[in-house]
Image 1 (cartoon, helix red, strand yellow):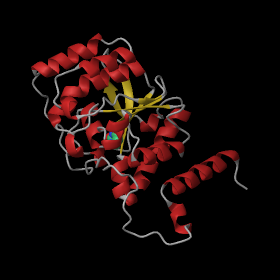
Image 2: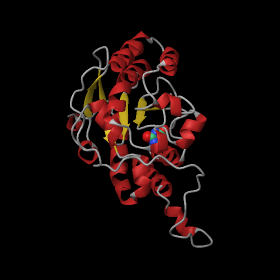
Image 3: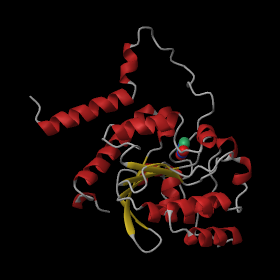
Image 4: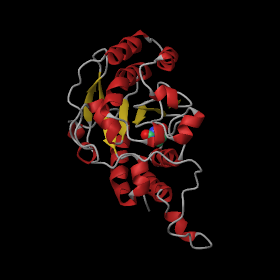
Length: 271
Ligand code: URA
């Protein structure tokens, strides 16, 4: 018979398989292979892992970039940051988006997840990760005992939907980065999860692609000098299109769970 920790691991593996759709095999009628997603609105297509493998070289400060950094620095609470971002006029994305998508989950939660940018459904509801990839994200984290109701705080690199769900440009990522770093400093998570290449590239300022960055912890310097540990992983939208990659995402989630159980990052997992 399994001991309690084996039991938990088996349960987590079972939840993961269900999250991955293993139970679809037992529908009463066979599901058509080329089924369209149920969502009415197009889902954000997270960039393929290596589509943008090289990070932008350090960019020259632009007037809008300086304004973003100055504005982000004035916010002393999450609510002030939300207001500052809503009032920021330095990006044309604000004109085409319906809503500012600021965050969801529990401020102060131990894990903060940073995604790419809102899709159509997120733009409509003003909340991150509420479309099909958000549902997968919820199931992935649930399989290691984490939820946005209790233990996750979620945001994106861009707070506004790029028209047509295109991939954010390097200039857009750089422009909004001061807001993202201020967001992290104010939300005070213990650990960061960077979902997809855009988040990893932006926050880690790395030239490497997500498939090289994922699966290990990286140090991130947050404004104010604090250093946090960040775990890049594959974006759920990518996993929806490439189910074979889900095993790598599962390995990353187990690393996250271990780090939380240890109260930090295990020595062998430190960069
Ligand atoms: N993809 C993201 O990266 N963020 C969202 O909020 C939704 C889809």
